[in-house]
Image 1 (cartoon, one colour):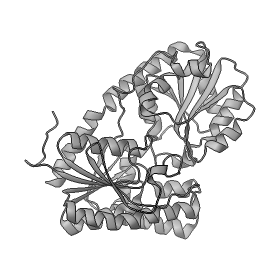
Image 2 (tube, one colour; image 1 turned 45 degrees about the horizontal axis):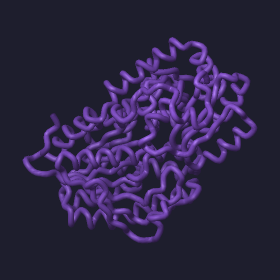
Image 3 (spheres, helix red, strand yellow; image 1 turned 90 degrees about the vertical axis):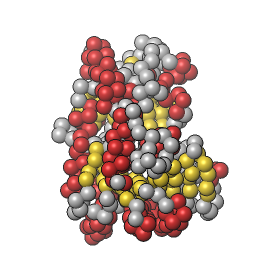
Image 4 (spheres, helix red, strand yellow; image 1 turned 60 degrees about the horizontal axis):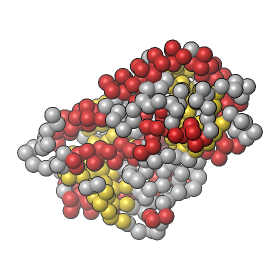
Length: 416
């Protein structure tokens, strides 16, 4: 049983993260659920975040306007800073977005630290640009600071050519290392990323594995003949290959169009792409003229289990430049749905290790993905076996209460 109190009194936690509810994909899901879970245990949580904008990179209408907003979301006090949100988050515009959030967060976090007096300041990367706010605020009031890395955004940005320049890269990596080394506690979401974070840190701060979790109660294996199939006119005998989630550059989403085109002659296969993001337009353009592809918008959380169960096979693209710098958060739902995953992952990568036994990890090119899909299409027994293992893996390794209990145990030590 998780202890309700850490030190005989309510613990105060300040979370600094650019993404939060009502966003439903990516880091926002975990930031929101962590804050709400801690609140349900009797702790007091405040959050500093940006206006809802992800994955479509467009601020929700009710949050438009250059002003700070305070609201209460499921017991959590949330402050939203009016950060610059670019329609196309690339190059200079992406840097301006990060800088605006960093600068505006600094003032908000200092006010919160002195008024709220948190015991722990918990900063989530992305974005590392907000780290100074967490470090300064925590040091000024004697609180502990914790950096949780969802992805190594600096290396990923340069590796994917979102940002360019040798000097800029060198400076950014040095600054990142400096910031990382000033936190009392570090954590990240995969074993490989733990080792990377240890190499980046010059301090003696402990590095904890703090996984993203699967909603094993909310997402369960359902019969594949879902309402989505009926609505889209997909025959029950068809094999549905599903990609659901954010559509952005680091996913290598363009590969999916090439895979669909490669398998367009296989009438039993239907590709279903559900989601939103800056790369969706290019994906739609790449699929023009294909009869074996259907698109859906990003679906609400309450329909996620049904959507994921519509699949016979999940496909998880990932560009090799981003290998081990990120671990796609959508993997947890795929596993919980009890369906096999075809993932673009090099053999020694962290993603390949997570998928092993639950699907097929293949070289990051469209031919390999197409071949793996065909293998699963033609081998129903293998498909079912991998799906059963995927569900069991989600329950044993990715269940929310167990993972957050580990966080609380570590936080209890960190706060002292």
